[in-house]
Length: 511
Picture (cartoon, rainbow, N blue to C red):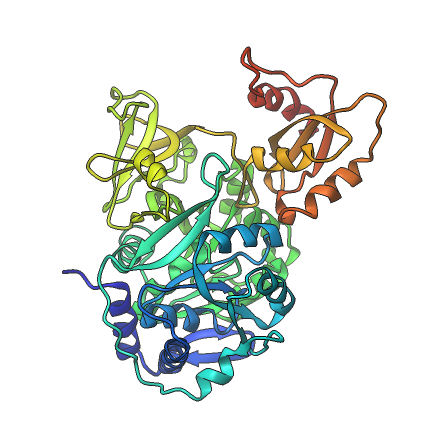
């Protein structure tokens, strides 16, 4: 039997006890310190009644305690449920309503949001990290009174350890669940296909650790390498940290790379230690990639294609393939991932034809939380997972993404689903009809654009509509532009023809 998630944490702690594990600002923790703090956190959670299989919600931004808290949940045998702090109160409310969480851990800077959620869910036991709500406690204080010994909770490979919310291809909220075994599979997938980690390697994280960036923590941990964490992405500071901290690997979404290319310091900085520039999450604009490769060298660039349901690498595009026609591909299949292209009935399409990408891998989720019908529609016989992405293999085995099975917008690495935003805009009394589309953007790859029809005799400012949306959803989901039309094209059965709108407006908005 292969090692589980908890086994890999313990192996790393034993093998590399005095090495530097985490750096955050001016603070630094060794492997032993991270492990002991994780044990104290775990013992504190257990003392408050957390039992194996319980769900614990986390509202914590990147910081010194991100990794110890993650490991603590694994050691306590609980299922951690991260909530993105950028989401609105309403969105976080929906997520907590979906999960039966009794414990809720929040960052010191998120006390007010914790108070708001506690008012909605009075049964929640709120625990801060260096701060507390009026009715809650401080996990740091509680942990300081606990033993630093491992709690020795017995676990099994199919125990759910992580639930990640994703809106999927339809905009409907879904909760993908990963287990002790699948998360260990993710670690092996990354080490096997994407990155070779040595003891002296250093990885810099500025993207949220609850997303793809956090997947790299465990591979670095088991190899005795160092994780440097930023609270948020500051392009100039990021470049200077690459140099000063001797960073060997970074993981970026396309928007981050584009912002870096605009920094004056990038032309003079020392990148002699930087070995890998890893990117994914959304399509990379070719001009940005070519500019970056010209500056930093093609040999540093690695692309991955994956999903929350099957992280991190379904395919990889290695440095030697960052040239010519291959730049349009998402890469070759990962060595530990099986890929089929299927039709709607789940049958394999003919060689060379476009089909829906279906995958099977040790890193695949166990399924969606509390969604038997969705699981039945997404997981086919034999354990094959539908991705809802359309793809095509060439004669050399490279996979190309050809289309989406939805109109999902990817802006700055974040997924935005048009129906969700349309529902919000349609609640404004001035709007008669609305279609939300993604339009090309030089910085964000795609930007959210609302095409609207106003009610007769009514006027409203663009800024008012944008603010109306921003008050109800995360800021990155709000429209960046409003287009007013007299009529929105529809199919004969009344469905919005978003593709026609995208084709109509994309060139005009690029100018």
